[in-house]
Image: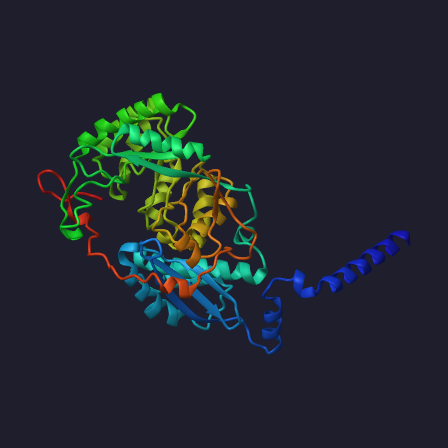
Length: 450
């Protein structure tokens, strides 16, 4: 009898507390509108799908906004394929929108699957990015409707913050070392490094031909030769270990630019310098070489930012030929396939290292970090600081502090889009067809991979 009385007293006190605070103060922000929709017999539906193109940092971004018949309830997703922004926009506006209007936005898996097979030819970057914009927006929308951050929908926190790395570059070893120190002094524990090679157009380091404004970008022929590069990089790491120490974790991106036999030798030559990982040693077309590479080196391997198709990465993971999966989440279709990929990797001790440069929108970065927070086999996250213009256009960007990304507990992805601010940064300088990579040439004039 006493226990029943205590329980009744607790329930009564709770009811009074709820009444004092106001029921709307503790319910998800969308609950009242949802109740109103239910009262009228109107089910939740997608009413519009829109693309917003903006470039607040000078990089062409594509963001998808999915709206519903519930007032104020919408979601945002990243569909950024910066070299083909208007093609993705067409795919969303002309093809996905008519397919999706009227559907229930909470059926995320069904919408992804039906959108994916709606085109007989699939697994391409344009369709995948278009689907990603919708998919991430639906996760954002669902979180807002539930009053929960997306990481809670993905299983909840595995960590409080997300460890990141930044990119240090320079024309000389000393310049690179100074950049590494700048990052470590700011609290970063991981730094990716790249150095210019005299006479060679090196990935990540601007050359004089890149900056020659007297020549149109699509006519600036740049020379790339792999052998000077693979001779230089081990010397860079030797210099860094002597000058910045063994504590900082160092990374390097080959960017698929060297022949497989040279990439294998480079991975072996870098072993003494204990890299955190060597990124993209091969192009997707050459992934058959990973079996040979794994047998010859203990250097940790990361791969995947160019992957579109699960057939490109499932074998590498199940055969334990890579240590980090490095995909661009919008390139494979959004959060729905990425969370499955992370879970698949967990069975094979492969860790995540999602692609996160400037050509991922702040919405895409937020999606990366929500997935990182909820992924037990998280490895590292590529990061960037958001300019003030980006923060104005995208209020609620993930926050970088002491080398970690931190998220708020706001519902959904916790990020918004100010369309008036976005309109101040229109995409006006559409790139040439090849974004000038078609003019990257070997010394004999032959084209080469970017």
